[in-house]
Structures are given as C-alpha cells and as structure tokens.
Length: 315
Length: 249
Image (tube, rainbow over all chains, first blue to last red):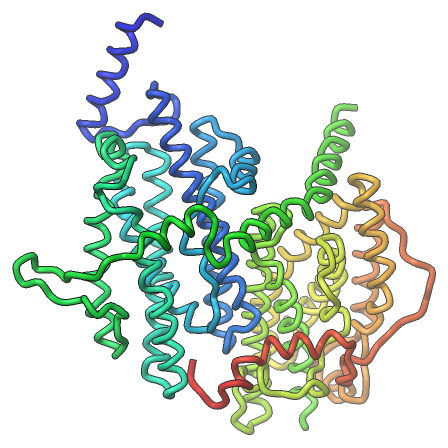
C-alpha cells in the first residue's frame, strides 16, 4: 500500500478516536494499536484466570455455606471474565491457545497481585475489597475504551466486580466487628495486601512507558498515578469506618489537593515481583501449566469425538 | 431421632461432600469452560446442601442451623454415600463419579417432587432443574471420553471399574426408610434403581464402555462408616469452625 494511503488511513483512524467513535474488529487499525490491545487484553484475561488460584485456595475452607457459595460464584465470574476477554483478543486475530502458551512460558504477564499468597480467610475479604476495588478503578474508564469489544466486555465485567468488591468489604466489616482474633486476622490481611494493591496501578507516570501512546489511542483513559490517588482517597475512609489501620505512617490528609498524601511505594519489590521473583510466581504459573498438561488428553478426546461425529453425519 | 431428619441429612451430605470435591478443581480444569462448569455445579450443590440441611435442622427442632450440621458434626455422623467422597484423580474419574451420581439424583428428585412432605417436594422441584443440567453435562463427557481416543477410553473405563463398587449404595435402604415409605414421603428405591440402570446402560453403551463383571459392592456411608477420604475432607471443610469456634463470619 502506498505510504500516502496509510497516512490517510491513520488520519481517519485517529479522527474516529478523537471523536469518541468506537473501533470495531473489521475496521482498519494501525498494527501497534492491535498489538497493544492484544497485549493489554490478554494480560487482563490471564489475570482473571491466575486470580482464580489464590481465591480457589479458600473455597474448601470457607467458614460457612453462605461464604462458600459467594466465593464459588465470584471465582466462577472470574473464569467467565477470562473467557470473554480471550474472545476479545480473538477479534483482534490472536489465537487463544497461543495466548495461553505465552502465559505459561513467562512471555505474557498478569497482575502481580496474584503472586502474593492467601494465608487466611481474611485474605478473601481484603482481595475483594482492595484488589477488586483497584480493578474497578482501572476498568471503569475502560468502559469508554476506543476498542468496541473490549469496552463492551468491560461494562459487564465492572458490574460483577462491583459485587465482588462489596462482598469483600462486607467480609472485612464482619471480621472487624468480630472477636479480637478476627479483627487481628483482618488487620494482618490489610497489612500484607495494602502496598501490593497500590502497586496494581503500575509504575509512576514518569516511569510508565506505554501511557502516552495508550492515552492518545484512548485504550487507557487515566494515568497510573491518577488512579492510584483515587484508590487511596476512596479506601482510607472505608478502613476508618470499620476501625482498621492503613499500614502507612506517612499517610495524611492534604487539604490543598483535597486528597491523601501517602508513603513511597517499594518499587524494588514491585519490579522484583514483575520479573518473576514474587512469593508465588512459580506456583501460579506451574499450576496453570499443569492444568493444561493434565487436560491434554481430555481436549484430544473431545476433538477426536467431534471428528467421529462429523464423519458419521457426512456418511 | 426422626426418620425425616436422618433422610434429609443423607441427601444434604451427598451434596455437601460432592460439592467439596468439585470445588477442589477450581482453577485446575482441563479447559476454561470446564472450570466454569465445575464451579457452577459445585455452587448448585452448596445451594442444595443449604436447603436440605436447613430443613433437617428445622425438623430436628434442636436449634441446629445448616452450618452447625455441615461444619460441626463428627465423622461418624456424616451420612453421604461413599461414591461422592472418592478422590477426583483425573477429569475422567471426576466425570464418571459425577455421571453415576447424577443418573441417580435426577430420578430421585423426580420421585421426591411428589413427596407428601411439601417442603421436601419443593426442594426437589428446585434442585431437579439443576440436576437435569448436571446429568446432561456429565453424560456428554462420559460419552466423549469413552468414544474419544484410546487413552481417554481406557481412562474412563478404569474409572468405571473402580467406581462401580460404590453404586449399589446409592439405593441403600434400611429401617429408617420404612416409615417414610409408608407415609409417601419417599418412594421405592427399586424403581429408582431401574431408572438409574436404564440411563447408565444407555450412556455407557454410547460411550462404548462396559459395566464391570465384578459384583462386589461396598457400602457404609449411609451408616456413617466412611472411607479414609472423609477425614481429610472434614479437616479442610471444618478448619475455620474448629479453629475459631462460635464466631460469626
């Protein structure tokens, strides 16, 4: 194609985005836009799937039938999110199995938060409250993302995430007003998950390599630091309300900016977990890889059976 | 102890323990669609457990809730059949276990929708809808795996051979049932076994699988005599309630 033609296509593409029109699967799009979306959506899908593991860890030990049912429903939602996010990557020409193989080889990333272990029942509360809370913060703006299938998937995902967030906070509230052991369990969970939750928004804006282009393409609609600030401002009063303490001695209200100042994030820890050296990186990826390997014969059988049925029909 | 209480606990415990086993798959399924299906079926069983044990507690009249019954009995007081506590092993074993159970649960609930006990009939009515879908799912997998590859055929045939010994217990009846039968609360287990066998034969035939010749059968679960598996299941299931007694969650 002539360079002039490509320039014209790019101009029209950007014009659409600037006018807040959606890009659909069959529309022309720059290759970088496509690749960036595939990377982002598949990371998101992997996070949903890997995220089933730390929570699945507590289903068989949930303290009563109601909590067990809610946790099962929540984890099932996450599998569902994974499924339609993988489908969204397929509208961009990605192959689901290849995408999953990239997760297993370590090439593709997922949210680092799931590399932290779930050590007590209170972790089910704190994950709903903070991790799903942060996910909502990240994802609500994505309902206006320029890529149609992703934006529409996010509308549904956000509805379910908001239920997850509320049930998590409700677990924390119950624990916080329970016995001293329960309150200690809740505080300990908050202590362990507070900083990793803030890290979920990614590096500081100055360090974030993808932000500028993604903002121009409206794949991303707020910067990492803006979202992180929102998270802190919303969460601090929620913790106060139930009598839990945010584990940050530098946290204080800033009248001028009408928001909280908070302490420095340990970016060494962040990068170390991203690079694979978190407490559970190996366990999570191994579990996913093992699930795929152990399921190989099942998928083969399903394919063989389908082929036989097709033959029968044809004959 | 009332016969109805005992009966409800038997049914409730089947769901409780099978739901527990299915939950163990969460995040480890052979395909994402099956992760969704198995958590969904587990969730249905937790729901059925809740209805059955809640009603059992009411019938008993000692103030025990569904959670007291699910989490705070001793091993010998659980009444589930041995089949549902058997380990997941691989997906083939899990689906065969599920199929053998679903093929019993569906006609059972069909019978119980006509129970003279209105509450039990209502629970059966609601659960039947779920169970029909469970049976469709597990039967389709048994057929797919049985008539899939050589490897899958061998795996599910072995699963069938190993699980067959736990199937007679599905139709276990004892003194407890006499009064319930007489009052039309429950119905003939011979009828039930007939429907079950018909379904099993049809599906196994399509799956090119063979019912094992060995007629030896094990039972005990309905009387509270379990396999070694149950102790470990309860250690996990009851962990929170035992470690932090008497708390609200």
